[in-house]
Image 1 (cartoon, helix red, strand yellow):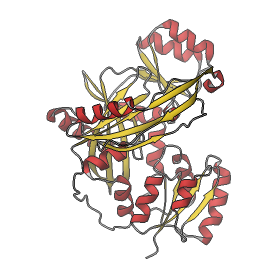
Image 2 (cartoon, helix red, strand yellow):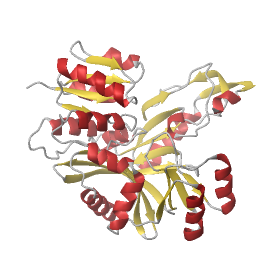
Image 3 (cartoon, rainbow, N blue to C red):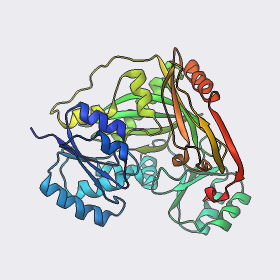
Image 4 (cartoon, helix red, strand yellow):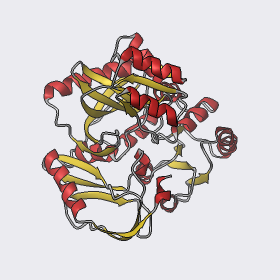
Length: 400
């Protein structure tokens, strides 16, 4: 049986899993990824195509598929999902197509309206396409509330609005188009990783999250420290959500706030979680969601299978260097046996950016521990050993 898939915006870890399973791959990348290219085998194929240009993408992929047929077109990242929707609808190869799921989850207004119609995780919501609509929502629902893009994008974060002064300050800077306003949910934020096959759903794990006031994450840990009663409540809530929204196949990443009125959906994505969440669950539970997805594509009657736990707990903390500074010296050591993985996205001579979005993270460190508290502390201790010196100049261009 021919085994070849096309992956949009493939990561190194995803590629390693694909090759471990003996599957040929066609990688479609927006820009050069040297490390990815170096891992490809002779029967793999690599193309650089601007997959955000959908017209160009469909044209080029059409040519590729004539020469190199594939069994599935996938992406495990937020950036690649619009491309997957376009390609799955143009070339319906997947036995379990995800395009309808992806479109529903990416349109946060449509998703929220569906949930509200079914009185599930109800919150007040309004499409904001004018200044008048924003002021009207504030008058009708009060404060605080959240403003975020109607079409989900990982590069933009939500904004909390707490006063009319903040409303007018926002309107002075921006003319609102295709935003949604919804009630702010007070409570602990978590995320849930799931996997579905033939509309049967499995909760893989719950991730505790560490968040700045501006909603930018600075860390995660696994397993959750919530008590058993709350874990059961969340599990049943998520399974009902997946059934209600008609999820058929594949991994989902669901963001939830635990409020005084029960769990509330913040956002949902038809993909694995980013920010090393998949790695954390793999380290702790042994479950590899990328492998489950690929196994399910090539298995007629796939069923959840047990795997061995690797570590009792793991955590990731993201580097947060001073913004708008030139790095004069940077030394990161990985000598501690508690450190599982790390990556730094800046080098000596670079100018650091402010962390204004998830894509601005400077790097990360993952540590294991006998429990979550120890794993988090091991991360912090490792970060304290980083030697960094800044040049005296302040580079305001890095704010752009």
